[in-house]
Length: 261
Image 1 (cartoon, rainbow, N blue to C red):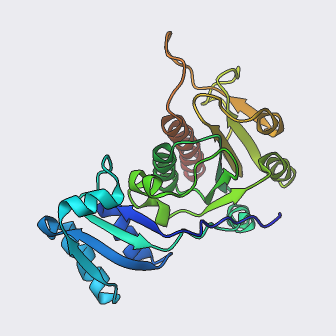
Image 2: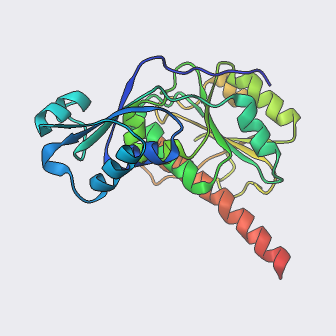
């Protein structure tokens, strides 16, 4: 598999208690400074400040209005933010190898998911499901922004995330190496719960407006749909992906339980 990493070179501002706590605990990136609203240094924020001081990270107390301007007027900062180094994307090969190392490896691939908040929600579900990694299309798909980190509520620090410039070619190679590549496609005739997901699986999801690109769709070995009530055109991508991930988990647990009987 070809190496494809794409770190953003700019400093970022994480905001919210859980994203900042996870950044301080996981140390996957350098935390340059923690900013705290003077009125908010209590509870979980106090725990975050203790972690920062133990690691020798500077803490600045600022008026709440100053903090809010830093993260954006409509962002929910919860009284704390952190200036961090850019997220280092994982290597695509690293993600694939981690999944290949297990008989039931699980990878999530995303195409045309453009909203950072939706991406963060997907990453939260992916971390909860224990995926081996998430691979984002390099073009037309949101990256690991502060908005994504806020919605992910710390999950961004717990799951490998890679970028891939040629997603159709990667899917073809996954097929050749024994993965079942299953795409969510509202036009599919097979229901989401009718597939068999007990071996290595790569789930593929797209944005709710346009779905995945035709080239991505063509390469997938299986297509499934989540049936919706009349008058409902689509599910939010984070909800749809969550449904699929936990269907995979459900089937695998049932299979394991059957073997133990």
